[in-house]
Length: 185
Image (cartoon, rainbow, N blue to C red):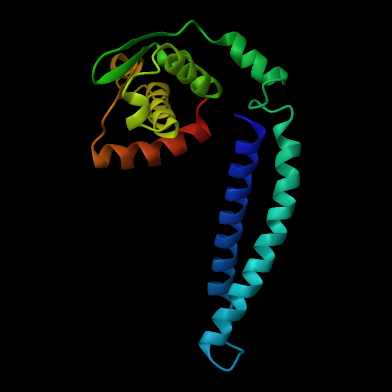
């Protein structure tokens, strides 16, 4: 992951968490001291925006600090160690899906790199037009989480990335994949 993407994600999460904290504080401790509820809500919104802007300035600075030396920085020892541990990835692409064999052995840090390598080998595939890199990573992470939890290891050791997903598969993989990316290696 490049530094720009890392900073954007860091700042987005900082803003979301700050907004949630402000909402909870407003609901638990807020009192109507203005003339009516509309003025009170307006006051909370304006103050919330100012607080979030301040947190974003801090988050921008901290995100750059945390990026360097992290497992996302291609020059860091953590990234190089993870890259050194990757096994050669064997994959097969058919008309409807991409199967990555022994995908559970690949660290989440290298998901994007492996998928970029496959895209370079098969740039004309419909997969790259129908699926985003994020959705592919979420599905892969969900399989790795299931494998780590000993859930149908014979089926979750490899990942099948279908070109077209049903709507409920998109929702499940987005939710579970986001959680999985936070907890898997």
